[in-house]
Image (cartoon, rainbow over all chains, first blue to last red; front, side):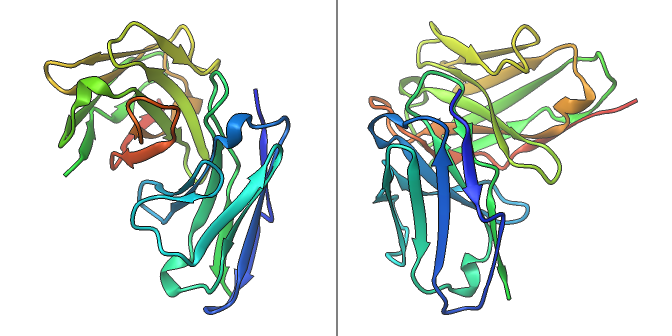
Length: 109
Length: 121
């Protein structure tokens, strides 16, 4: 099973600031099958990024992501009020189980 | 418009059973692999189970193997999760989720709103 470790656990920032979230895998994620989701309280997760760096439909370009192998990152270039949420990475390329990181909460400073 | 609507959650005693349903619309349900993902109170996301498009292949997380059964009825556009021998640690919001692509390895692009399962005496 691939274990994903996200850091930091919480990121306290102000609107307009840049956010950088990390996701590290316990073994290489095949073919960069790594996704990022955003989840707000009481809502289902929303797909932001797939294939490690491709934005999903309708996702603003202030969201970008990169990485390969075991190290991945998500960057929000300028935080908007609606971006304060919990972010999860997920690997979906290996045989089951498909695993998620424990999440990074981006909160308003 | 793609929609996934879960139902069937509720309060059940330890050792009890529950069947969750996920009604799909707005897409060709029979073409897509489907998954169940759960989220315990204040916790992160955990993959539970998946089923391929024609029900010929299923997979389960170790924590539910032998207790949960995933199935689907493509004629009714509905996904199911039969949960038996429920434990307190199964308490969670259960989401059904669709893979982004019917033909390639992909993450989830649509999720239901979730249904809450509470296992308690």
